[in-house]
Image (cartoon, one colour):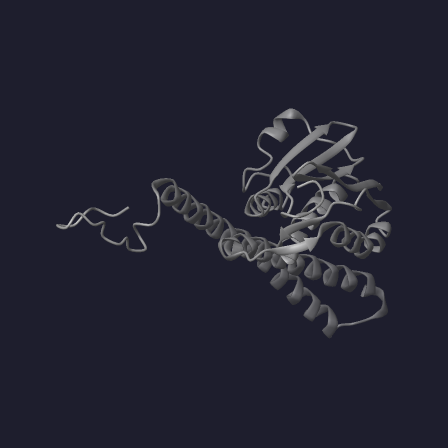
Length: 257
């Protein structure tokens, strides 16, 4: 409430006064984090760009002196360029998802149908990597307020981590469960697992044990989950696998609410 005027009536608040101290701090922390990420991205972008330019020059020179003996080398150069461009695109997309979160517009979605469709879309790609994706217990999950494209980014990031943990192939299980007024989703893999020391810094941005990775995937996933009023937890055992558990409030009127 604004300060009273001479007649004892509260003055209207302007837009700045509507923000509470915690909201100010949260906004400042968010801007600071985005600023740090922008600086890190500018550094990270230079490395793949340098690689792309170098291999493009080599490729151009090789094409000028093309013969049947260097076909494998040319294919290698093209593969490197494609991988680096893909990496650049992923870096920018992760950053853009973070920047868009304050304007996230959610709508009620049939969560079970959404997960079934996602699983069907991903099965062929994972099968090519010798990974079996199973979707279980999606019926009866009811509706949940979500932003479909942004929520898909969470699932893609989690699947990407599972794939990297299973270079020789394995199994990924995506399953759901109703817990009264809340919905629980789990992504489980049979990968290499993680030690406790790695779990402790898992959601810190710019932290990663992978070479040539900026370490944004799980941080972005957590921020999107929080924007959906949810929580994220990771349980992992080295040599056994990892389970990522997401918990969200169900939409009012869904079964169990």
